[in-house]
Image 1 (tube, rainbow, N blue to C red):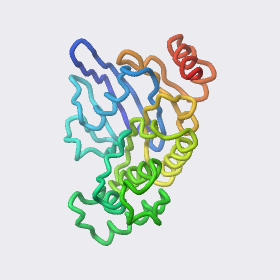
Image 2: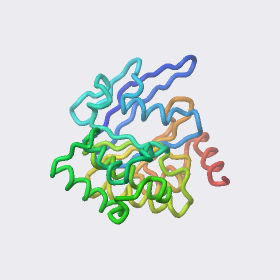
Image 3: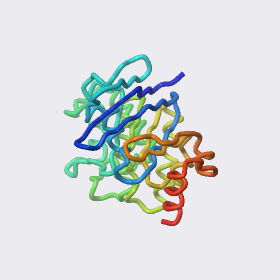
Length: 238
């Protein structure tokens, strides 16, 4: 059964228009790939509620969410900029996922400890963002997402600024957390061959539309769509 269903969603911005239908199974991972300006980040913003569609519906489970305020949606979104507060410790930054005023219950504290352990940050909880590496800051942002206890995780190129080895480690961590916490993940990436290590399927976007979607291995090894084949040659060369 599909967990996420985007049905007939249309979004206009000036002369540009996004037209998308997409489904995701519970616990799966879909990677949105395609060139800049294809509509990948806009699609995430529509799911999260930062943009409103002109028409169409978005369901998570049996719940229609496109009419809900962003804070009420069962969705967490992580951006390339980790959005940590420099004056707070990593523990406090992560704890914001439980309560924006840091008024924590014992249950919250247990969840924070679990999230820090899962992202391997336990020894760094008293440090501030400026005192840790870029990869550790991204892990803290990921831990904060876990503390929000929402089943749909949206990742908008969160690891682009990291070196290749760190990107591999972060992708592996996302995959591990997805399986452990039964998350459904939609990730935007300009690196299809890297993200395919954790994605069950790829959706290739161009000009505000999904031109081709399917299993990751098949999409990469036998790209039947000519625009997708050209894009993959370009990203492989880069």
